[in-house]
Length: 224
Length: 267
Image (cartoon, rainbow over all chains, first blue to last red; front, side):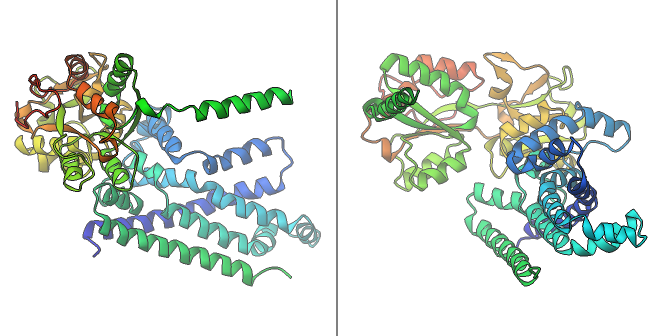
């Protein structure tokens, strides 16, 4: 039932989602930490910027990426001058696009759990002589563990389901940018409904399981 | 203030309730033909007083919508298989199919002087990306594949393919410079009779099977005189002039008979 091309799309999707999630945790953690602690007047604009992908249609993001990162765009010129080539039509381009697109799904749960910790445990740690890095890794991170799990699961699942951005900048190249959602879309458009259903049902089941895991985890570990 | 709001609201409701159905026709149009169809629809509305509601989309998508009960009365497809299929499935009115245009394929680059007028650049290479429409979904993509096969360049160029899900997206790849060149529809690069900035090769028509675009009267429009009138209007001389000006080939001119579809002969 699963053709070689579709199997490759599934594999590519999992690779994309894993890499994107790792990158998102690396990038999202400092942003979320800063947003949770800061009293800067930039807090509002930065938080709004992070949340933008929640409300913008992905095609808008894809369109701007295509314009800015292409050979005629500002970022594209820069990356080409650095010898990195241009982002559209590459796997790296998809990673960048997905990272931007899933950013709020990682930053917001992290920010919430950092905020929930409050200042007190950190102050106590400070009076006991812990430096800022020590406070972060031995106090904040363990206390925000659930936030990290939620963020990772949401970031991963959201990237698996991503469609608009990858369609706009991917170019549907087999083994490179033809991911699961694009494969499903192609099957539907080509009226190959049974192939489409096979993949789509798999995606529905996968997404349900992921969310089920997420919500059971949350229910289990409600702080008393 | 409140009263004024109420007044606005009630007049909106009144406007919505005004019956205009009698002379309305709803037409589903393949995206590539949206531009010329808008002009044709406006002229048709002016001439007959019928109001045209236009929905554009990929032919496959329109087909799926029609199958699932979309209220379209006429379909202008980007191919000839979809109208035939609809007719066979009883969703199109038998005997009302006709070709309204023939698509022309062009190899286009947004850089002036990049594409030569014989398409020799394809063999020379020197580009990273060649944009084509997904051949599985878009007739223009399938046509591009057959051109490359005819030129014995298919296997050499396949690794450079980037696919748009339709020709609009394919053009976007080329216009934004992300792909140096791409196979698009001539109709996309002609803006009111003049070519866009850049360079193109009009691919000889013997290199690909005819891109016949057929229309069909749908079951929902069978009883609507305005729908039939629109189908007839598409074959008038003034509509044909619009179609040609937008970079399409024309089917043979219809003879005196106006409700009969012209034969499916190639030109």
